[in-house]
Length: 127
Image (cartoon, rainbow, N blue to C red; front, side):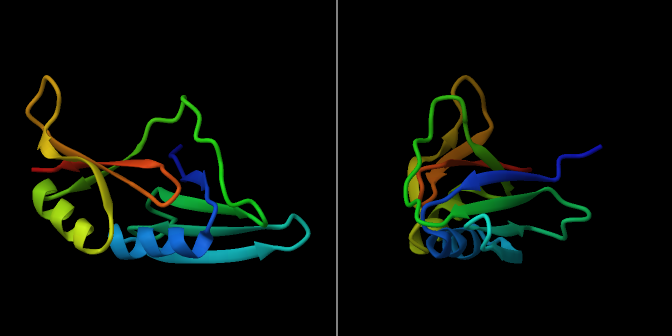
């Protein structure tokens, strides 16, 4: 068994795809519209779905906002240099909500940014 994907509902599919591809460097793997259900699915990731966990963005036609709730925490992405990644993401329009630095009560370097719908993404330094 393995985790296949994580699904996020988004209010503006084009804006979200631009964020995940331009700011976070993911690749658009596939996209399909479901007219009978009035929704579109887009799958993005850092590699093929057969070997990697990917992100599914779900756009329900006509819905432009969701309440995020208090149960979901964040997505986590490993990067070689968190400080450098934050600077590049800022230049690409990424919204950093916690600057790079050591985690609370630890030494691992982390940062947080927010996607267009307010979902948090943690960047974790990978040595």
